[in-house]
Length: 209
Ligand code: UDP
Ligand code: MG
Image 1 (tube, rainbow, N blue to C red):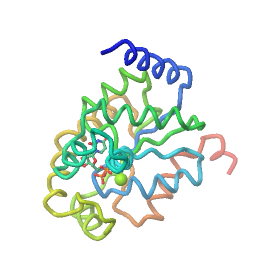
Image 2 (cartoon, rainbow, N blue to C red):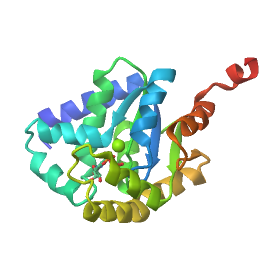
Image 3 (cartoon, rainbow, N blue to C red):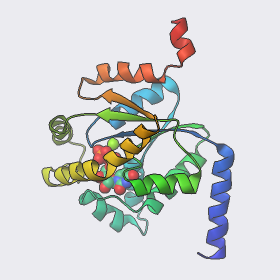
């Protein structure tokens, strides 16, 4: 690493450490409803939504030097190298005045998780886990038509495999730390949000209600 690069890295770390943002990781298989429910949480609870997948797709569109590599990995359902995704997340957190963030679709494997904690010093307040059967997720992905190159049956099968093999262990790790709040995500959107709302409403407000 060059001197300038090292200095920049240090500057990012110190500002993030000063900022001490509150982070909730939103995890679940592809098509489990993370993006939909994050939009609801933003509206009701004042968080800023950062979708790791959306940040990566924006990076492809921006014509960055990593664009082609990212595009190829997404097409194959593979996990983009941690340093790329973490840099995008750090930048997004620092550019935003808010101090409460929903990080959706990240960390996707143990390496993502460990690298994020090591680089940013941030550990999540809790992990919101959308639990959904594969057949329901498959139905949603094939029906949603958002023009995504990875919403075809071949890539969907690969994404499911990566989720089971690499992402579930992250949820298990946080579960062992007592940090996972699990939601039954197979229900209709409104019902799922009722369950989500209960998890985000502070205990004192619930008592007053
Ligand atoms: N992706 C990644 N790292 C991340 C988030 C996303 O590599 O932290 C890639 C990965 O290839 C994934 C794709 O982006 O399959 C789409 O992710 P997104 O979260 O948008 O969709 P999901 O699979 O959760 O529906
Ligand atoms: Mg998404």
